[in-house]
Length: 96
Image (cartoon, rainbow, N blue to C red; front, side, top):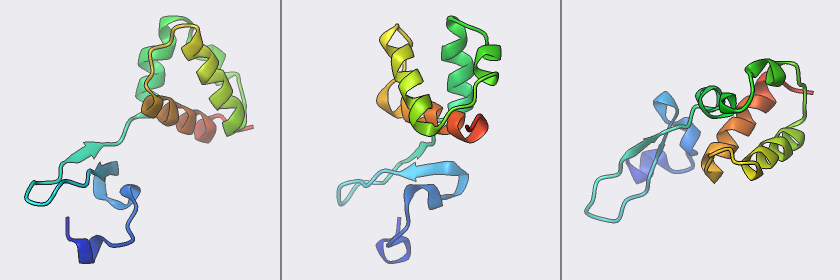
């Protein structure tokens, strides 16, 4: 990562949908792959219900977030970052 070249860039500006962690001086920065909301949805949400239920829904981002957080409360295994990725995917794919 070049501080002069990369100044003002956001994580989504890097190729391949990766984010760059800011390492301490003298260490190498590592690229962290962006989370795939679709893959997470397919892997985690279908443990309890089919995707037909999701595909039939149209919600705002706030409503999708409330739904996903409710599912986490019922036992869906998603970290905070994974919740964000799933909500972003749902809001873009199944908007209200």
